[in-house]
Length: 285
Figure 1 (cartoon, rainbow, N blue to C red):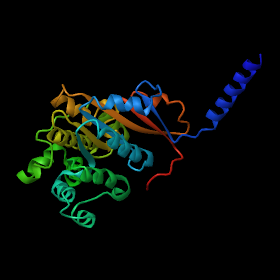
Figure 2 (cartoon, rainbow, N blue to C red):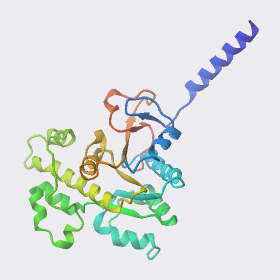
Figure 3 (cartoon, rainbow, N blue to C red):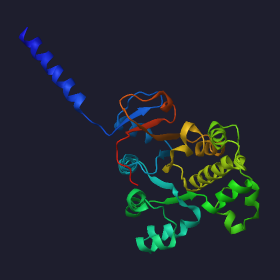
């Protein structure tokens, strides 16, 4: 009887301690079941290409991106790439990776995001320290703006040099994909709204194009992008699978919730792995 009382006391203490824990994030699989980081890592190391969807100002997502790269590096040859650097800045990025220019030079020559130094420089610097390729995958913003105003036809006027910084023309486009249809719904009846999903698609197509250009058989490509570009297995992944259906893909997304201990129904199925972050985590900007 005394032993049972002791066991019950220990169980109560354990539950009390568990209730007092305040994790900043919890990982889930696509069905909303909690998964450990180690289990996710084991799964990811068997893939060819990983799309890590982030909220651009989410500190936990940026931290986990770097930790994932560090932990996968000893297990597989890595190639990194990111939406946050546009394709026409690849030369400047390569100069930095080779040590031929410093950060000040990169910041002067390339169009870096305002949160580059805090959120993306650690990834680029890891690539530099470990002699990894890092692909600048995004379409130059000025060309996406052209598409938003005039549709895909606006890209036909680009020079041959400029066309080297985008996915080959004509770009495939499926207006019935839920993500693109959702953009139309959000835009309502605004003038030219039918072109906004096309602008998103030209980004997705271009990122997929450069991911496959930099991917090498036997390597593991980890790509960092806004969650909307790969949520629901659409966007970038749709273009990748059209061109290379035999490769093994994995997606990660980021969501924010008030209560992270149970994944909201609306957040299930967004990706293979779902990084659920407490909404009180301080944003990076």
